[in-house]
Picture 1 (tube, rainbow, N blue to C red):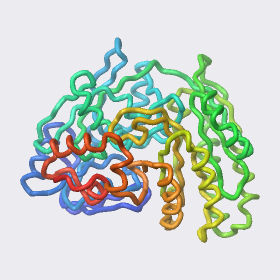
Picture 2 (picture 1 turned 60 degrees about the vertical axis):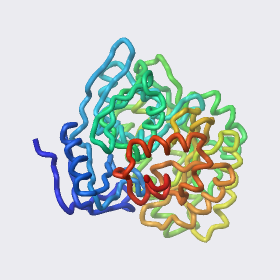
Picture 3 (picture 1 turned 120 degrees about the vertical axis):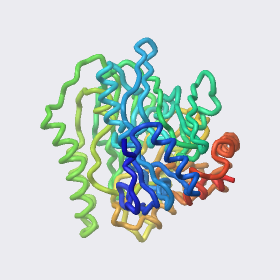
Picture 4 (picture 1 turned 45 degrees about the vertical axis):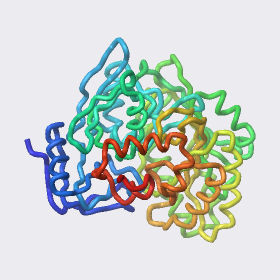
Amino acid sequence: MSTGKSIGKTWSNWAGNQSCVPAISAAPATEDQITELIDLANSRNLTLRVAGAGHSFTGAVPTDGMLLTLDRFNRPLDHDPETGRVTVQAGMRLHELNDHLASLGLALPNLGDIAYQSVAGALATATHGTGRTKQNLSAAVVGMRFIGADAEPIDVTIEEQPDLLRALRVSIGALGLISTVTLQCVPAFNLHAVEASAPLDEVLENLDSLTQENEFFEFYWVPGTRTALTKANNTTEAPAGGRTRWERFRDEELSDNLALGVFQRVVARRPDLIRAAAKRLPDTANRDYIDRSDLVFTSPRRVRFREMEYAIPLEHLTDAFSEVRALIPTLDQRVTFPIEVRTCAADDAYLSTANGRPTGYIAVHLLNTIDPTTYFQAVESIMNQFGGRPHWGKMHYQDATSLAERYPDWERFATLRREHDPEGLFTNPYIERVLGPAK
């Protein structure tokens, strides 16, 4: 079977801000092919990176060495009905995983807001959803099979190698290649979704109670307006209902994507119309329906943007958001893209942005045609005051020196990295910037 190997093939990410022309690109379909390719990279002294679905905004993927994609390595492998554990190949996309789990009567306990990513890519960057008592996606991992620089597969379980698994759960691909993932799933469940507009000041004043009273709560704010768009999701025994197929298309494609794109184009040309144009967004966001959990958590993203997201201690969330809110009118650059605010429970993955602390998240965005540097760096300066940890797959300007002090298990991860990749096979300039040299 062919590895799908090619020479000089350009790779680029979804947002269009990262690209590379690796010496060798390959799409292995079996684990034997993966190990052969790792041996080849070693023999030619090439570094090796793995691309998921290209939904990271950072330089985590680009390489001039060998680039692997696991799109052909995406099958379900095992299901234990007694424990609810499911094992899949690492290249499976989240939407494929969600459908597979639904067919088994299972679900993941929490998800982010898109399902395009590969399983391994979402885990590697600490992808998360929202929910004050809910952990990020990587916390569901109870086992992995991974292949280090020596090309020897290792089965790692929470029972037998908890230390290594805590490192592998969120690794930015710096320890080796994840081959398979075993996830602790929960019985399938429906969510009652209530999406509504509310005065921003009222949401901020009640944010603590809103995040405690709802299992999953988040809000968006369009700068220049006084209104927040809130999303409250709670489990229910009631059957799916409240939206027809047409209404779902209207909500997700016309309102959430087409309307947002039009809004961005209008205010870019006529900034004075921002409040008038934004008033139309809350009108389309008042929704009340019940659906399968993953279909509520995730939605399409057609408008292309660049994003930076910071994780800060939950107790500082309102103060940090208020400082960002106050910052925006002082910028020379006009900001019109919604800001997203979410929460997450603490976990113990060494490089998880929620490691050891209940966490609040603030995500800022700009269209992918606009240089975000001024805006993002100004927001990052605020987040630094609160010990902010940047999302590993989203833009930021930190390095290993500034990040090491923000993670209590930083040295434990570094020790395992030296052990499993002593010569720096799985590195690139971004990895060396944020984690330091491998050697």
